[in-house]
Length: 381
Image (cartoon, rainbow, N blue to C red; front, side, top):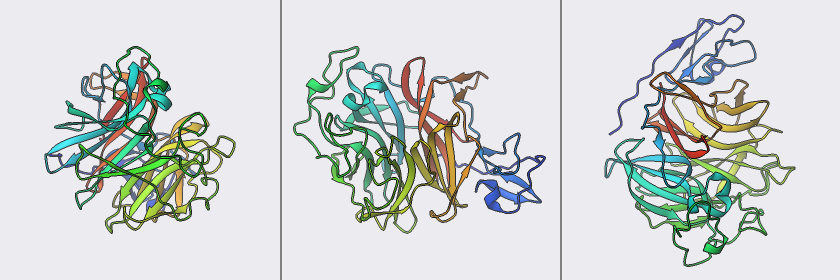
């Protein structure tokens, strides 16, 4: 089972910065005599100054070679969503994988959701199967206390084999779906070429991580009533609250000049419609690929950010309504290994934080290294 994770403190007295309350420490630490004392997994920026937040830089344990996460040698993938199952004492992963030996650039025609399981969050992985056939992308999965597995993803419509790209193999895997799958959504998301295949949030439920999965349309009571995310909603990230409510962070708004940003919606339960309660977290910048999680201090969102030279962005809130943004990038595009090497990656996107109770345990990322795409897993330090 999962090892316990204990909070430690990182203290830094930084010239020019004096915290006055907990929010000044990014909801990742305590403000003690004007100094942020950080929880495990977070540190103060070395050049912290007024207008910034303490405890806003993520800290990970070095990655061991061969234990980087989900790295398929034959089929490339993009990101990974791990879930611990107490029934079989195994970790189950759900990832976007690509047919035809193709890379991530072929995701719109070749992406399907792949499932496997293993004894730890980083494998080794066995028992593979296809959760959702092509086209399905960017899954994030949670296990409800009632035993229901809930997966959010984009897509749900099925392409014939003839539309797939064959990059390095002619093998037909997965086999062609027996039907057309789900129809287009109401905001321009659906099969190419008529619709934008890059969006369209679906929810799927199952009583087993092995499926079968019942795929349904996402119900949102104010679907078109929240500018600028009133269109092309995509990249869903779920979080279950203690009262049974289900929070979904997502990005949308591509119809407004190609600009995407992150917002939040909430439902009373996974069986009820969602309602967008705050949009957006940030205006006028390209933000996507959110992950959302709750600690004892509040709520946290990490995302992929393509503006101002940054690659990642961090938001935090005490109530899911008023959000703060750290102007400091929470993590760079480097992977620190246990041998001391700090390896740069070409792309690092799709962050997903997995919790151990109310404490962050691991963060996964979709990475591209040496023209290979796979799912990185790092433990908080």
